[in-house]
Image (cartoon, rainbow, N blue to C red; front, side, top):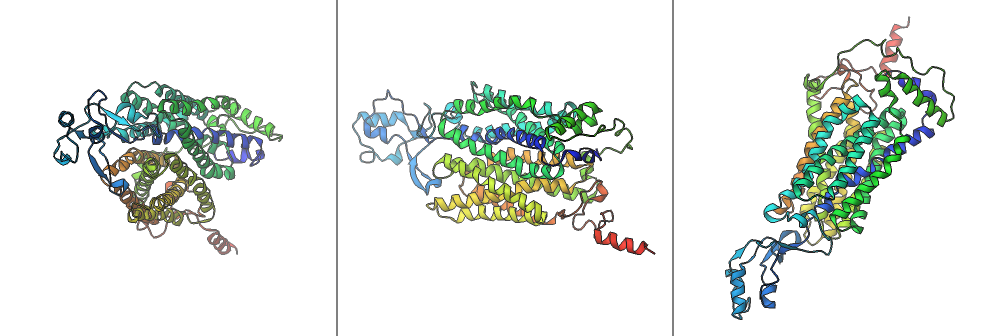
Length: 554
């Protein structure tokens, strides 16, 4: 409502009511942080090799030589035991019975090989079990590993489609807690998954609940909080609590090494959010759009009581909405209707898609880095905290276009530098990757608010929804970028670095929105370069207004 801010201005900016809403909604974001990237530990691939049946009567020499050695590019071309093949058991059993020695009497390069017909033996020094070791998602079945994460993000894509409609129809609060329950309960049910197929089906539903409760909390906070606090909540607040949940993930993974127990540990914190139902109110804005004025007033009066402020006798007028003239409702086709908005939309879809690929690719790749997987994951989470603080500072005082472009280009260039680092300089490579993750996280936080500023009020929610869907498509693809490591360790970095740098350069073509008033209609949007020299519908600057007033003054 156009005068909602004025009607509720008496509440103030940062009273007890606003603090309660801010922190409780932010706390509901924490489970999203460790759920979204839980496959880093749930689906990690332990060191493994073909199982040699214990009942075979092999000499110790042949037992130690039953697995061929292969070069491992991720370990500087060091020779390691093959993960997917072994020497043919019938042949080595025959050599063992004859008393022949491997490498002395028998040239191992001439011994035929076979697949892991009896399964695999997994190293348990880091994990007791993962879904990979549970269901043998290795070798010919290794494609199922990245697909596991893709199922989750397919659920997130579906949730992006339906959450907004459900929230508009049934209310922000109901959708928030219903989808929190879905995420928590289906994560709990996953613990009992009898197969990979069932696990992925349940993971899809968890993805639906994950994105839906995130969006509901985001919208609920944006609609309840006043303008200044809203800016902090939607940039630094939500992102910092998400990062806080992400930092808890390696701690859970460090102390719980079995994937089923880890899932149980990740599900239980969701039950701690149940009491929040009695402390988080419904959105008064949404209630007013539904004609439920008395309920909206009751929430505002309760807020005034908590803030120790005396409310006016009448806060909202029941006829307020009815007196507004009807306008044509904007829809998704308007994002492509004119040349200007079409170019802006396509450019933002590409940037959102690329950013998501880079962010999730780097986050999921922590399990493949040299050193302790839990420490690497913790570092990847911690670098996001200063990144989100920096993004808020840049958003307050810097050019949107230059801030986004510099963040993207910096992240892309550092990722491209990784391939130039020798294999033995692990710490340098990890440092470059963490700097790249820092820059990408900064850009991710910036692009959401930048997008909201570029689009007019009549299209803002629709535009953010389509950008979110573009991001979800990127999240589905991202796990397969990491899968490319099986062909070349440098390939994921080259692709992600190139795409991110290109997105940074393309972002320079977007209109600048820093210091500009938010557009209310499509005609008031800033123009894409080449579409128009000057926006004839742009709002006049204060200087132009003064000059106009002087000319009108006799």
